[in-house]
Image (cartoon, rainbow, N blue to C red):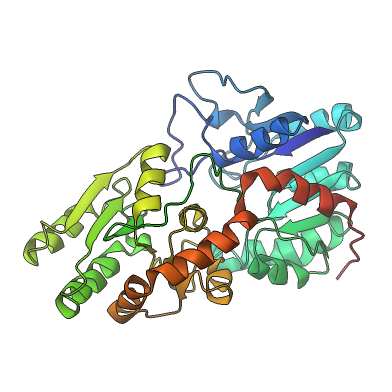
Length: 370
């Protein structure tokens, strides 16, 4: 099959600033594209020119970088606008069998839905209204734009929460849920865990890592019979000095390690060895590290902010609830083998290699409008 993937934003900007990078080959959407390539599909990816790396990709697929227009209104880091995409689709849409466009709240998806509705699937991650400008742009988009102009295109959600959210607006929502796929060649399990908790997060206020340090301090004081270290992987987003000061003030220097930004292979090694991944984010709804941990056979303790918390609770892949405590950490530590086995049973549902087949199932599914 000839597959067109439209995904302007290749990696997460920092404070709406898009840094230049040497390569984008390890980005999630490139990994998805390669999963299609490995199954024999011919793949083209459309992305924003602002994300073009300094070194050309060596992957066996075509990448088209389109310039963004009206950037003062449609910021490339949030809602890119590519007038050339309209011309590209008009000229080349007959060349493709499938078009996969990221997010329902997207000008790209609107163009694809209007110009090639029978070939397009919108892969939607959002499970709630965007909070910017008091949710007004999001409310207008979903209730008016999507209802009127995108009602004939099929939507595939990345989580049950996202699926329920989109169904509210009369869309054709597939019963197939397709989460972020994880490369099991890189993230593979280890049954015997080492005594350390893992945190993977950019060190800014929204990730709420200070809360995790406080919970760890409580755990260390309450359960000295089950000592565990505490590893934090992530680049500094302004909170690092505060976090290090807390560690110093509470004399936790010997138990807590700041790993900084680490490579994918180093992250995979840490996750598979860790006894548990911890999360208490204030607004990070989509955490790829949660899926990476589960595929690595590592349980997760999280609040209910991530959209994947329902699966964690339903399949007992750890603990998912608001205001979790050191007692929950002790529960996962003492019954670790139980949670590890649950993760290993669930992990195949998250394999990247299975994602193309799920899209094929969604494309051929007869999906009525909700």
